[in-house]
Length: 224
Ligand SMILES: *Cc1c(COP(=O)(O)O)cnc(C)c1O
Image (cartoon, rainbow, N blue to C red; front, top):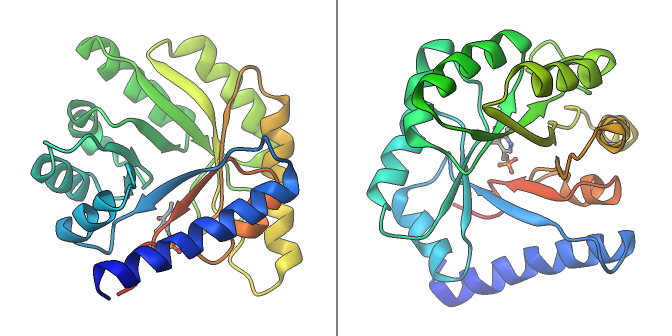
């Protein structure tokens, strides 16, 4: 795709988001995080050139190599993947704009110790497994509010700003919608949570209709 065709393609995606958010209400703002995990540094630069600033990666190593290569661009990097304990220090030194995938109290406690040691605070989302799928990470929806409160209480260097969820892996729209709505209900009850991150390339309109205000788009933002 040349640059003009690419810009038209991205404009079309933005249009779809505009329509979805407008149906919620005219003041409902949705932020796009472009997930570059299957893409090259050049592709990130190409999307930056037409206006995108927020990017997401799900592997610490990739986050490191892309963010270091593009250090001169004013990008904000989101970490959206499973964080293994042995990668905590590396993530802290990369200091992402937002860590979206905190998925257990144990990980929160381990991070708190290292963050305090580095005298650093990390903006973070609690990942909730509202799809209730074995293969997905995240805290269970029934304990999410308690865990959120516990982290707020015990982990001053983790600045929780809201929640993240991956929609149910299903052909059945109602199931996907249910996982988004369950997340939104939890989000609405949390104290000063502002970010509800849900929706990917295949389900972002449904996510926005269910109250998402941050979508994580990979394949539609980087069509091969
Ligand atoms: C890969 C990934 C995405 C983007 O997926 P697409 O379907 O390509 O849009 C979003 N969120 C997470 C957590 C991911 O791992």
